[in-house]
Image 1 (cartoon, helix red, strand yellow):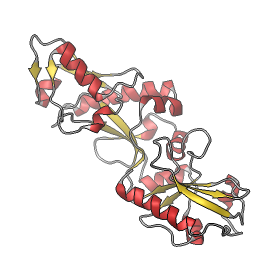
Image 2 (cartoon, one colour):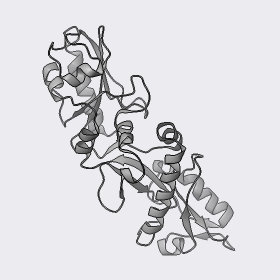
Image 3 (cartoon, one colour):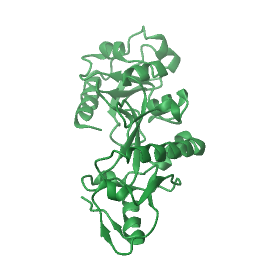
Length: 274
């Protein structure tokens, strides 16, 4: 989460806790009733959990007396991602093997096309889901079903990590009634509207300028055609991409560092790292 996202989560939690012991309005929106939230329930407390685990789609949870909690996915108005940096294990858990196979094939096709005009070297491509424009974006429904959009937005399975509503604003609500008025159900229409079109974001990582992101799982990898006779340091994209092509990967949590190590040790191709 970004600093501004963390601040929104903190401010919402703080405001709600100021009203601990008070009751929800008796007239709740119909969608909240469908979720099982009980009108007039007493507010016990709120907790910010969005930054505690990457599995959490709930950012702020409101615990209620004799009611299921209100589990809020809080997004800034300009938030780019609903699902940031999807690893293999998480992907398989939420979407399955068939979708993974479609994703890695699409990623390899995208990477080989991107390599024709890329100005920065990369050896793998990671993915995110959400709002994206330009040549790194691909339609979400090219790979996934529309129902999968809900999985990305609200979470998978059951439990407090699965959100049951969205709050989209740059500022926290001033009171409980204002919060209730601003909450929205997580529907395909609302999510797509919030992201201005739901996309897969292909994320080629430049190992020469990026550090921690090299640890993200990849959905395709660079594969050389042959081993160079001597160890060669390569920083030029045309030189690098003339030596091989991007291929699909297995769901074995391969990341950019793994590929860089393999290229250096087994193919004598050394790409400097930040």
